[in-house]
Structure formats: structure tokens, C-alpha cells
Image 1 (cartoon, rainbow, N blue to C red):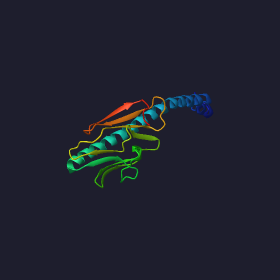
Image 2: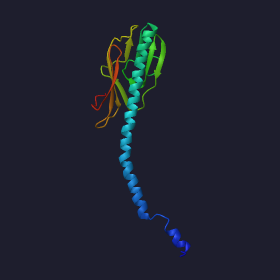
Image 3: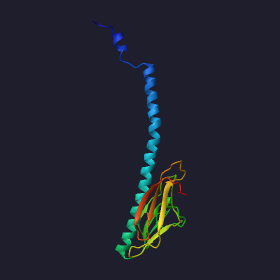
Image 4: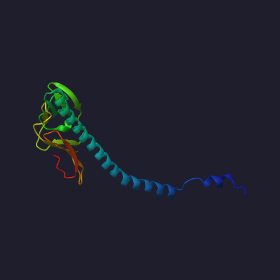
Length: 171
């Protein structure tokens, strides 16, 4: 049986009700997915900052041994001199004498990186031993309930570890 062209074309489209149901389902899925994605994105960024700090620490220690000279890992806002304010989020450098061996740019706006005792630098002597221990907290500047943090602990011998916490101790 042959149907007129108008009836055949009518069965191929969406009704307004079907379109509204589809849009509603999409909005509900996005409402659930976006906060989860934000959490994954935050975790990834915190891990990146922590591993970059660990890599800089390992470089400082190994360069001190290789050069048989003192090498410093320090907070630095300008990328060429050590800062004394303890704001590691401004960036950091690995320094041998006056030579910058590695420079890390500033963290994204809204992140804090602070050493628990306020230290702005870590020094390694020619044997690879450091003078002090450090514990650097990395977090959002305005954490929310259950916020994520990373704590980079550096022993006096240069051994590092990264710990994930939700304590809210970053300040």
C-alpha cells in the first residue's frame, strides 16, 4: 500500500515531549558528572605539583653529590633568586652557587604550597645530606569540605614521600 508523502515524513521526527525528556536526562547526567570531573581534575593537578617538587628535590640532591658542592632548592617568585616568604606556590628553583639548574613556574591561581615550619629553602651539601627536614602542604587556597591535599615530606637525607590527605591543614 502506498502512503502519501506527508504521512511518511511525519513519522521520522521527534515530538516536543521526547526532546524535553532527552534534555532533562542530559542535564541530570551533567549535574552528576561535573563535580566528579572537578574532583579528578583537582587530584591530577595536586599530583602534578607534588611530583614536580619531588623531582626538583631529587635533582638538587643528585647535583650536590655530582658537583661536590652545596645545592639549594628554594621558593622563588622571579626564577633566579631565592625568596624568603615561604610561598612555594610562586615557583621554585634549584640553585648551585649562582647558577639556576632548574626553574619551576608559579602554581595556578588559587593553590597554596606551604612548608609546615615556614621554610623557604632546602640545602644539600656535597655528600647529598640536607640540613633540615621539610613537609610541604599543597592544596587549594579556599578548600571545601573534604578537600584534597598532598603533603610532600622530605627527610634530612633527601628521601621524599607524597601523602594524600583531607585534613585541611594547608595554610
